[in-house]
Length: 82
Ligand SMILES: [Zn+2]
Image: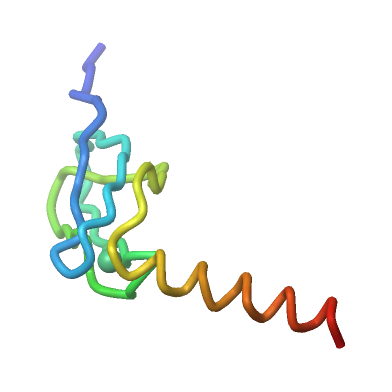
């Protein structure tokens, strides 16, 4: 019975600094994909090989996120006022 290496890994967005955690798994097949940052849309990590990455979780927002949260709150409060 073969066992494939599996574990958790952290990636940081190169653009805004958001931190992501994911599960990686070494597979006998070739896997290809990429994860885009939820905050700024930059590619956090792309892969094409025998290691697959899944279960991406945003664990810390990047610098750009504070701004968008602020505008979201402003939008909500102006809706309440209106
Ligand atoms: Zn980002």
